[in-house]
Image 1: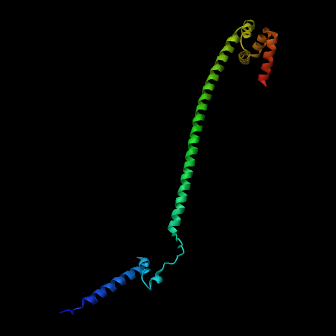
Image 2 (image 1 turned 135 degrees about the vertical axis):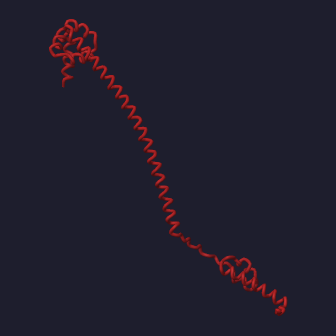
Length: 182
């Protein structure tokens, strides 16, 4: 089998048309832009002058919208988390302060219990003494201490001790006892 001989000139023309056809196909498909080259051709170049195109509307897919919403939600949740962490730190500090205050109050309670025990013991001692012996001692003690001791003694003993004290001091102690009993 023999192939007929094709003249070289026809072959070159076919290759040129195939090349031009391929370029035109790419241009129409939007894969390449030939406008800058075609504008310089005489006669037909004016057909390829680029028109000012209106800006294309940006089409946002539903996934992009959802992605933006999720990003906003994540930001909101992160802000809430930061706010809650700040509040937690504040509450932890308050808890520590309250624990310290509780410890101080426990120490005060213990101290007051010791004072109460001491006053109870003193009241027992003074309760066994004669009123004439107690009066000079009470003259040298502060009113608060004397009042605390008198409150622990029996009424009969308190009356006898007040009778032995200086009348002015006895009157003041009586008034203070009366105020405390209210």
